[in-house]
Image (tube, rainbow, N blue to C red):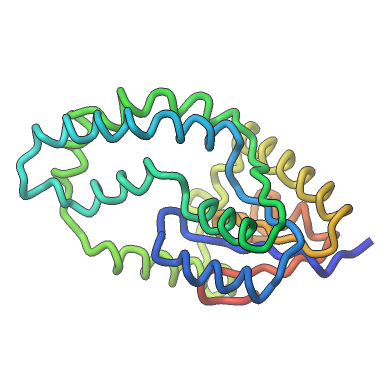
Length: 232
């Protein structure tokens, strides 16, 4: 049975400036339930770990020359440490409208990666490597990524298999994750009339070398939208 009330909103991770546009889009779609590409484990772990992460970050940044502490790469890393804006915006909308906001991702990868962040991602060595790279304009960085995503989703941009945005799905574990999340969304969509799923934009890609979340949800006829600009 086809469902025309499932919307997939693709975001640029870490692009917090898109938060207001995401909230506005949720308002226009008026969902009955929102699902987000994050696991319950990740949310709980981040909430507990953030004070430690930022303490470690401040200590190790003190070993880097002041002129490099505002490097765009460092600022991106700071964004990575916070609760993803997609969840923050979705959760705020859900609270304001009395609906559910559900974390539907698997926690397998987070269980491996997050506990190691304070020793690896936030190490003095890693911060020095990031700060040694050429600096860049953060807004131009996101604008370029947004243009690429828009062109790729509209078919105006092509990539070889090795550089394809879905190349990570060549690994069985990632494919298993895509399948699991798809199944969870389908179960929710079977019970609710208007469902919005918020995820990274690559999950909106269809017809690639590997089946994506959108491919797996195609029987539900979802509308796919790139936040904040494009509709597909």
